[in-house]
Image (tube, rainbow, N blue to C red; front, side, top):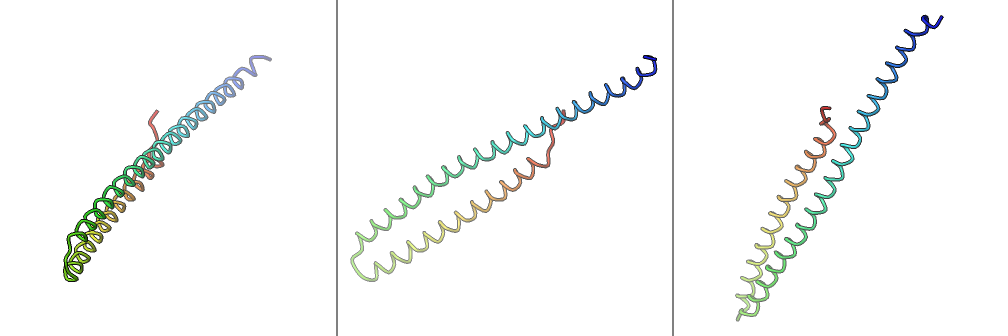
Length: 122
């Protein structure tokens, strides 16, 4: 009578092994995504810190340039010219800053989609 149950036991044993393999693979994929998301978050913190430092440095430079030009002005016409030049510098800075942030946004969207699209081949 044990001979009758042996093929069924082999099928059950095989299905348990298959379930364990699928579970292990799913855990690997989840771990890969978790570490990928953590890496993206850390990269964003680093990018944000670098951008903040860069923006502060640029703003300080623009402000010191403005102050030095204001100190050197001798007439209302000079003041007007200073405001026009410094306003143009500020507009150019904002334009470059927006372009840089737009490119960064594109890179983040691409990285995030790659994180969820790619599956490790194990």
